[in-house]
Structures are given as structure tokens and as C-alpha cells.
Length: 215
Image (cartoon, rainbow, N blue to C red; front, side, top):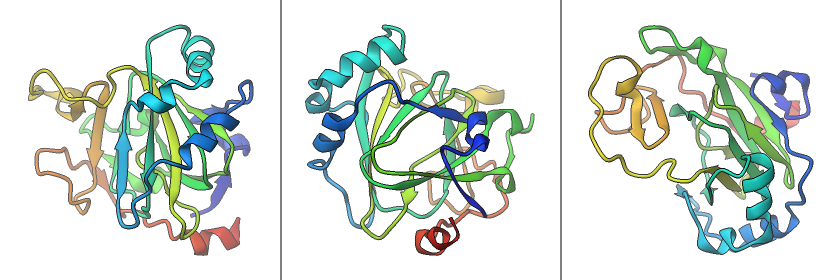
């Protein structure tokens, strides 16, 4: 698969580069957050990050004064495994280089399946922030190098937290695994059996060293 940059026109179908804010303080703070060597850690809301000045700017200018949470997703990963989406945009601020695997919600079939051959790969360099639209399928970032990745994740407050009730209805209701989170997994992902396994095709492996030379 071709590795494109988020500055490539192809990225416009999935989101935009956020250029109107200064993320330098946030990127510096992210360097002190944990980065597991063989796993990925996700913290939806981090009090230390939310105490930074950028929190108010993100809330007011990007999310239109809606309540938001500012956390992080760090670690080492090279597999697709699943795709999720929200009924809202998500902002990612890269404190390291990273790779995003992205698709479009519009390509999910009525049977709740998705062909992974439709996915595209995008490199996000350190220091860049991107807004992923609510129709963009995504999941945990992948490594751009052997050092792992660190990224701030900004979403409406409460997103990705525990549900108040089980969702066992038909249609997309069965995809809801957390608040404001719809998830479609690959059969080889190792995710719990109750998670809908609707990804068809390859469980894409992003071997960053090979892709990097092509980009």
C-alpha cells in the first residue's frame, strides 16, 4: 500500500490538518507520558494535559465550545486489528511521527462489513495535528519507526468511556462498544468475541521501515 502524507489532497476525504493553533506545549508534555514497548495504552482524559492552555483553545475554536476531553494514545503497534468511528470529529496531535490507517464510513455495507482493501495509509509527522471527521474509520496509530508513537487524542467528553447499558439491537447498535464509539473488528484481531467481526480481507500490517523508504 502507498504511504501518503496528511498534506496529500487524498487526505481531505478523511480530515484536515489543524494549523490555527500552537501545539508546542502539548507536544512537550506528551513526552513524559508512558509509551509501552509491546502494547498500546489509551487514556481518554488526562488532568495534566487538560490543565494546559491549549485545552481551552481546542474546546472553543475546534469543538465550538462543546465539553471535550484531552488524553493520549501511546505505544507500539503495526496491525490494523479494527476500525472505529464516532458521531463527532477527533483531533490527533502527533508528538512523534506515526502512521494512520483510514477508511470511510460510507463504504461499510448494510451487512456491517468492510473490505480492508479500501483503506489508505497516511503519515503524520511529529508536530502536526489533524482533525479526523466523524465519517472517518480509524483505530490506534501504527509505528513510523522502532521508537513507538505518542499522540494526543481530543474528543467530546465521555467518548470511549463505559456504557450505561448493553447494546444488543440490530443494525449499527451492535457496533457500539463504548460511549460514542462504534467498532468493527477483524477476525484475527484477538478482540473479545462479543465485538462485531466485520472486517473482510487482510488484517493490514504496517511495517514502517519498509513503507518509509517508499514515501
